[in-house]
Image 1 (cartoon, helix red, strand yellow):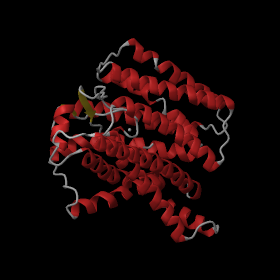
Image 2 (cartoon, rainbow, N blue to C red):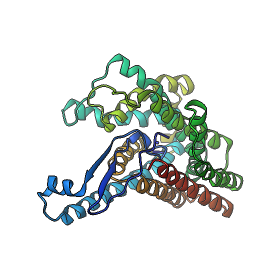
Image 3 (cartoon, rainbow, N blue to C red):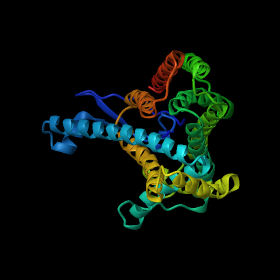
Image 4 (cartoon, rainbow, N blue to C red):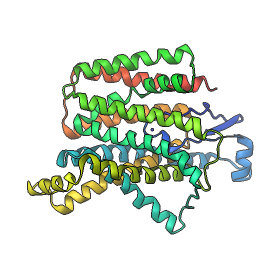
Amino acid sequence: MGTAAFVPNPASSSRVGALERSSRISPLSMASGNPVIGENQVKSSTALALSTTGGEDTSSSSIAETLQVGSYFALWYLFNIAYNIYNKQALNAVAFPWSIATIQMIAGCFYFVPLWLFGIRKAPKLSLSDVKTLIPIALCHTGVHVGAVIALGAGAVSFAHIVKASEPVVTCVLNGIILKEILPMKVYLTLLPIIGGVAIASMKELSFTYLALGAAMMSNVSSSMRGVLSKKTMSGKKIGENMDAQNLYAVLTAISSLMLIPMMLAIEGTGFLKGFADAVGTGSFTNKSLSILMALSGLSYYAYNEVAFLALGKVNPVTHAVGNTIKRVVIIVASVIAFKTPMSTGSIIGSSIAICGTLLYSLAMNSIKK
């Protein structure tokens, strides 16, 4: 939920014979669905053509680029759906969300650490000062994930994602309080359908629980705060060496893993082990099958964030906003089908209004950055 609240990049567009702008979006935006601190590159289409094909026709490369972006988006959606299904199945089997969230966070380390060790990806180099800068952001990153996992375990997957759609409201409030950022009225107006839609969906939600609502809002607040802290502490500041967006996300994952272990032990102790054994004892799982389910939930969590970075780094913010909105709809529909979760007419109407509101919010934010 994933899987992102940060600083939107300027809107961009491309046109033959005009300027082509590509926004680089950090994977830290995955949970929130808003672009983050990144770098904009502006090249003329002529210069781009000369630098890549020596002035030859670029239609073949354009087709290849389109197919590449399309495959990234397909994998982003696929891994995201897989994560939500595996995660819910794991929580249904073993109801220890803090332990499962910790396992999922640690699972990502088994992906990027080997890449660093074998030189496939340059390992980051951080000073103690860099680490101190990242710790508050990693703490918020932890809250984003734990809140989402608890919400997904306490209620329907569809309801958790409906509440997650209200994150822009929290972002605007925190930006105003902490950064003293006042946005144009049209941005604030887009918050009305979000608030109204979530309220309608919550009142009509058949699987409503206060825990699911509270945990999803905790995830929203953590995601928004992560964006505020990133803007306040990292904007214009270089953090370490080899800290591209993938490595930044990997470092935050590693720090969050270290944070989650003591939190998990303090809150749930070793209860997960008994819960695991009880689940196996029912005959629904074997030790191997349940272990594989836990591993898949963790690997799919990291995979969808990694692929999302690759996808979002190749499109402009408007395409990103539309893609993220469609992703949320796809996840809600997929979860309803997979778990046969009934949705009332009011819940469907409310969620539709809220999701449309998040799209309008993203488009409004991108328009003021032009």
